[in-house]
Length: 177
Image (cartoon, rainbow, N blue to C red; front, side, top):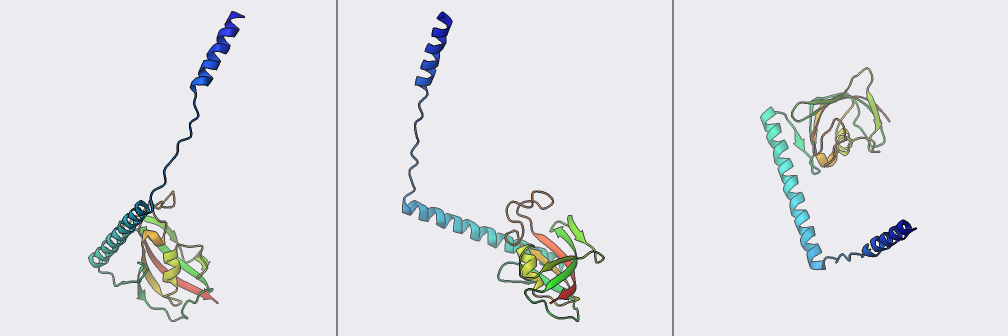
């Protein structure tokens, strides 16, 4: 009985010593919010400019004939096909080798089992989606896709690391309207 009383007393003391205070987090003033937004914009602009310079140096160093789009995608057609131009909604079949800019092979799809997707409807990296619309059936092309048009700052949690640029060397084999 004495032990029970002691146990109850200790339990009450323990409960009384636990205070569940709610911490109040003060909101940033509008001026602080603007400063944070400005800082994020400056950081994003810096990263975008740095990425653009890195790819421009890579293209120059490798001697590739490529053009940069307004979104940051780089593309170059090195073998012209004779077919129709891809239109949004077409089903396209491509074979490709996908590498990181350091040359690491990430994925490949052979011409015997090409990858098919509907152009302009998602389901692939935004940069591949954009680039495919520049091509004609039979074209062979290279795309350098910056992280913001591919797997971003998180990668694919597997083969593609965070912040990676993708280098596609592909052939547009078929277009089905």
